[in-house]
Structure formats: C-alpha cells, structure tokens
Length: 390
Image (spheres, helix red, strand yellow):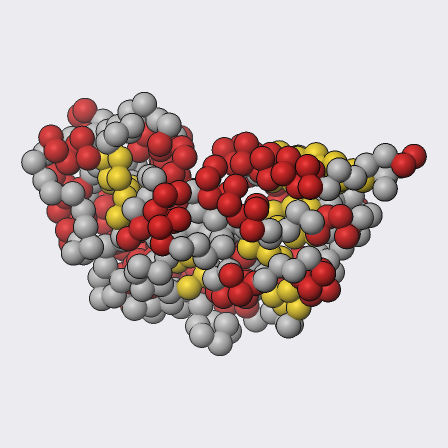
C-alpha cells in the first residue's frame, strides 16, 4: 500500500501524445484489476525525453516505469538504471514467446531481460491515391524498385505548385538504413566492431535519397527541416512517403489524406529489406514499488488495447486479428510479409555516433559534400565510438 494506507502511486513516462489515449486505457484497465495501484502518466515531448530521463536517472528521481527504445537500451542496462525482470516474468506469467524474438533480444543484456516489448514499428511506402489517379499512374505494389520510385517522383513533381513526388529527409530507420540494407550493405559489421558506411553498398543506399533531392523530386533539406516531413505529406501535395507504422493514426485522421492514403511494402534494389523496431516498457531500478510497477508490463490485455487504439501491438496475433486492427495498414506492409533485415543497430552507447548522423550527412543532402566523402566521415565517427565499446 501507499502512504497512510492509500493506493500505491506509480509514475509512467511516455513521449507520444498520439499514444496517450491508448496508454490511458491500458492504465485504466490495470487500475480496475488492481484497486491498490494508482498510475499517473507523465507525457514528455520526444525532443526532451532522453535528456530529462538521463538527468532524472542520474539524480535518482526517474519515473517508476518508462518507455525505452532499442538504440538506448544497452546504455541504461549496462549502467544499472533498469530493473532486471526474470523473476517478474515468472511471477506474472508473462510469456516472451508471444513476442517477436528480434524485439525481445533488443531488451536483453548479458542474458538478463530488462524490458518487455510493447509494440513494433515497421516502414512502408505510403502514397496519395488522389495524386496517382490524377497522373494516371498505377499505385505502388511489390513489383516496385528504386528506379520505379525515381520515375514516379519525377512525374509527380511540379515545384511551382509546391507539389513533389516524394520526401527524402535524412532519416535513418525510415529511410537510409532500409536502402543501405536493400543495396546489400550494412550500417555496422556483423561483429559490431566497425562501421559499414564506407562500403560501396552503403554509399548507394545513401545516394538514393540525395539523388531525389538533387533531381528536385523532393523538397530541399531546409524545407523538410522547417516543416516536419510527415506534415508535408499531410498537405496532400506529396505523392509518396517512406513512413512508419506509427504514422497510421496521424494519417487516418488528416482531412487531406482521408480516403486518399494507402501503404505498401518498400521498393527493392538488390533485395527486399526493411528495418523493424519496437519500444519496450521498463522498470526503474530504484522504483519504490517494483512489484506493482511490474503489473503494467506486457500483458495480453495491454496488447489488445494497443492493437485497437494504435494499430501495431507487439504480441503476435492471428492474421485475422491483425487485419481487423490495422485498418490503415494492409497486411503486406507488416513485418513477416517482407524479408526483414532485423532490428535497428544497438550498442553500448549508440547515441555517441547515431546523434551525429544527421549533422554529418546534412552536407551531402545540401549538396555541399560528396555522398561518399560524407559516408567516409561518418564511418570514422562510428569507428571511434565503437572502439570504446566494452
């Protein structure tokens, strides 16, 4: 029990306002099943989330539960900030076998589980059917290649009207990680000791995007910085967008896209590949009520609510259930229907190099530096950081 015999008070930090309603429904259901627990959701903007979390963890005042992502997990696990979960998994009868193994492994460190995946993210080619119809073009499908995208993007573009074929921001998970893998390259070597950016296939994966900007088929980097790319797509003047499954709710409620948006698998080059990722719920190592905090992690009820309210839960549901819940994302755009490369890169301190990607690659997107030179520079940054890994 909490203070003076009242309910146990827990805090749960998240960063996405679009997901807060679903999260609140999950919390409500858990509180109804556990009247002695009261949970307060803390919504922190994504821009401030990690800075604030690191400061709170250092001072010993982090929330009882919070969201964790794959690239950051190992740093928090290795520094004792997260609570190990094996005993709780047994006590609460939470089975990780119902979760994709690649996501489970993202939140395991030295044989110990620290987080239970709450959802999965994958990337698809979103397209505006209204613009395709006006141009007399067939909708994208699984036969599309990089060349098909480039051709369609040129046909759609009319810069004088503010209309562009696609958006080519320097985003890693949504964009160049996928195309690097599609070209047969890697971001990091299989042994985790060296960067893959200085290899020809990785350069090709980066150049796919810079070529779109250079050809004028995409707005400039400045335009995509001034207005977030997904918002540009929502204007109804962009033909295609490589976007995540997390865009589903946002696009579904947008007036310009309503009835006009659909999504399919990513186009291929030498192979079909897409990065997947998923967030996890984790407990703070210094949580005052670890047993009660564990009740929020990974239940089937939570996954069902996540599916109905958001659209891409982590539990592996039956195909019919997926179809019912992913009303804006057809099954062929989901993991399992395309060859998957696997989860996003994750190392001891991924942010040491990943936080510099946007700055290093910006010169190539602006056209002030050669793509291969930018890739070589980024490889150097990564190799320095990776050499310091334990």
